[in-house]
Length: 64
Image (cartoon, helix red, strand yellow):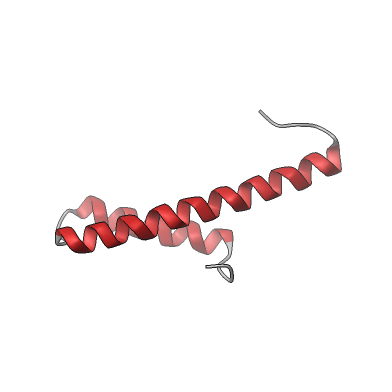
């Protein structure tokens, strides 16, 4: 997942959410998609935290 951009991870997460909200997939597929979604959320959170640290370092201000 490291070669994935933040934007592509968000798009992939959006697709998974649509699949899960549809409710037509079998339980095992839903669980697998949910696992992927959790990994994508963690990846995006890490990317955002890194960006926030860079911005804080550049501006000297912390965000709430």
